[in-house]
Length: 88
Length: 345
Ligand code: SF4
Image 1 (spheres, rainbow over the protein chains, first blue to last red):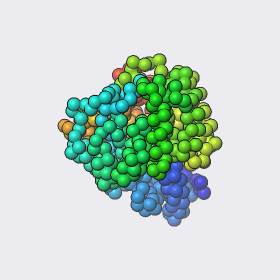
Image 2 (image 1 turned 90 degrees about the vertical axis):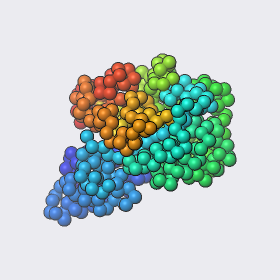
Image 3 (image 1 turned 135 degrees about the horizontal axis):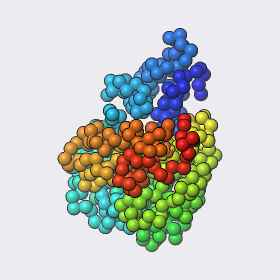
Image 4 (image 1 turned 180 degrees about the vertical axis):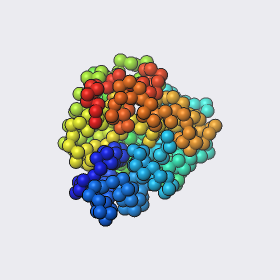
């Protein structure tokens, strides 16, 4: 699914965050997040996807219906806790 | 620790039930609790659950269809934006009831089935003839087009039947099978002999993984057996983990909690340490501030083997079973089969 390197700890926490979601919700959401996260990393000239890329992807590219759920799930794993709060 | 919104909350709308299941965690009997939340209180609670940011509510009991205002509660929970599902024994679902559930807006049902045959199911459910009634209920649900899952409880000596139950579930058109590991709480305290051994649990988990790997449509989930996820991570290729497997526990107090018919809030239906009472405090306050939830959310407070484990934030041990046996929310889960070496991630 990944097309470039991800920060290892970030990738693990992303996997943990999405693992409770139903597969049909998760598969689409994950594809979108990975693509967008990698695009944002490239745009900033980074060779590795970092937390800021994933947060930006979650905030801007997750479909509106599942956005808060995704941000909450990431926050539970310690990713972008402030971002999850801001959107509430 | 700051609370993320709950993903799902179960609301046991009544303790009244037409069956006498041996493992009943809510000690259900044939009459409502004298202090059962009335319709207005139940609706207020449902509103607060939505306000807390929950996505999904499970209306269960007791048998939720024993409650006269149940369709009204389903309608209300829909109107406040909650995905609304119901946990039922299925025996009261006539074609007419199924049609009313559709009209009220129910989105899915979980139907308990504790054996692959009449004898096993009826013996566990405590009433003869229940198997037939449950099957009729399932057929009515199917005819009405309501998505449903089958929910068996695993127990010592009989756990292998789950495979045959899963086969039947698929044949009947269920979307998922949610398997419960037996936890001796509520009425179940009287039957500790139903608890599976560690070896049985491990054998089940291996079967479960093999089954999910071979399956593209049916989703399997399991409750009260969080170690299964560690086994998944250790044995299943990453792509399959990402697309097929669901980590369904332990979410007690972190993504899930349960409210009983008279307003008591517990971290889980099988982890019965009081976190609050919705007649004294709003659900939102309880979810965000309860000391019990704070303890469960902070996995760095876990002790012993669980405290040293790299998987503590995704497994954390079966807090329900640990609590039932030791009275502690943070003690290690002595049913864990992994060695210390295997607990390095
Ligand atoms: S030690 Fe505890 S947290 Fe770790 S896998 Fe075993 S039960 Fe789960």
